[in-house]
Length: 322
Ligand SMILES: Nc1ncnc2c1ncn2[C@@H]1O[C@H](COP(=O)(O)OP(=O)(O)OP(=O)(O)O)[C@@H](O)[C@H]1O
Ligand SMILES: [Mg+2]
Image (cartoon, rainbow, N blue to C red; front, side, top):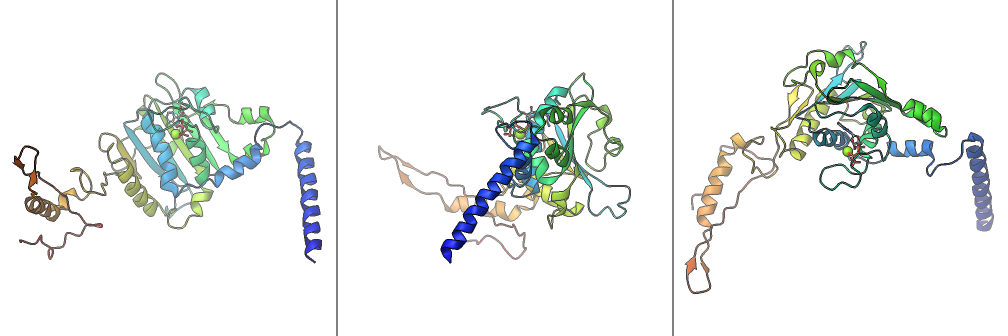
């Protein structure tokens, strides 16, 4: 019985291999080192822990391009009356931008002008395309270098997969074209968002247009929860960069979030009076005598900082007086 099952499985496997090889040959354009269509499908599943980590790839790129401001904006189709869930997400920065040809390279896996670089965030040329396709099936990269005009490349995963074994078609699809930004991005920004894309000297906009993956992630797709989660996440990972570099999500500025409450400008720092009391108190109690070589006694000061997570500024809690 078992032998029969094994034989069947083996025959099926070989038959499947034959069919597969035949299908690939019929595509008829020769083989590169990867099967581009399968690669594209696979890269969509490359595991970012959550959308905030994926979008952080684009923030890294913006900051590495010397952006002073990065604004994440949510866009809505005309028919989306409730505007509860965004139809588009745009990551806009006022960094150095890209020359047109570079946009076409940047959307390709491995396309980078800083290969192997150890000084900044990026070095592999995978961040932009991987993060974009992990959230959206279709996206456009617009960019404008200083003294240049806006150009764009649109990546549509279905179109690219269909053209995968045809280099000429792929190249045509990923060629930069002169472009204007969508109208909704040129309108006056709201809230803390002060990035005026009409007058930008240089910069980049990555517009995620078909958010098929984001839509399927419960807890992330509603504008309000997306904004809250992104502000929290960016507040932690870019806490040393804020406020010199501005991060705004859907009109709200990100504030540094320091898990150790050590940064004066970080969120909740104004509500830390109890922690400060505890700190002073504890540092007084923890003066530890120690022997120095030569017999001279010194008193090193130990200044622990006490905090709780999440912090509760309860009026009932006070540092003990003893
Ligand atoms: N916002 C941006 N502004 C200017 N250039 C950008 C921007 N985003 C991407 N680029 C350009 O596109 C290239 C590809 O970006 P990508 O994130 O894929 O790779 P990387 O940052 O070089 O490396 P890594 O895979 O480690 O992130 C970058 O090397 C950079 O030249
Ligand atoms: Mg990168």
